[in-house]
View 1 (cartoon, helix red, strand yellow):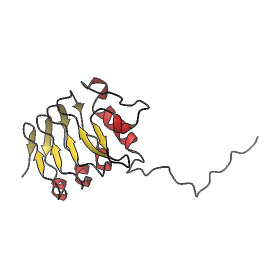
View 2 (cartoon, rainbow, N blue to C red):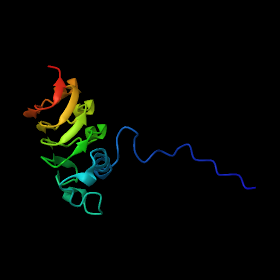
View 3 (cartoon, rainbow, N blue to C red):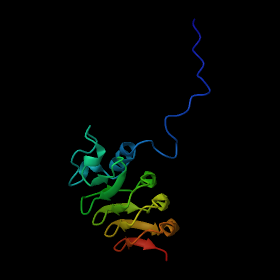
View 4 (cartoon, rainbow, N blue to C red):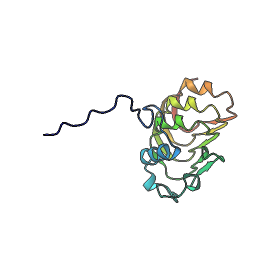
Length: 150
């Protein structure tokens, strides 16, 4: 029998285990975690269309997601930690939905975030202290959840 080739030890993974390589990958995880097939509007999601044309998503000229707006869109499930990998995000709006669980601490990695609307959901637990890292945050609305903390 022919022996199997030995893998090269110099091979590197195509992406880090802590950061995904493309906004499309991250958006796909968000779609799954928040039951995107049940959203009121999910036009173009998970199609071959450019992710910057997907409903609720706006990008800069480099194709990086800067706005994620899902007001009153029947979004359920939980916020995945991968949101923290959308580093250019300046606006995150999930207001008026039914998201549950905790607000992930990785939200503190969104250092370009200026507007964070998570009000009128079903979030529970502590408000993550990592929100304090968002020094450019101008609007933070968390009311009508069951959150604790300062």
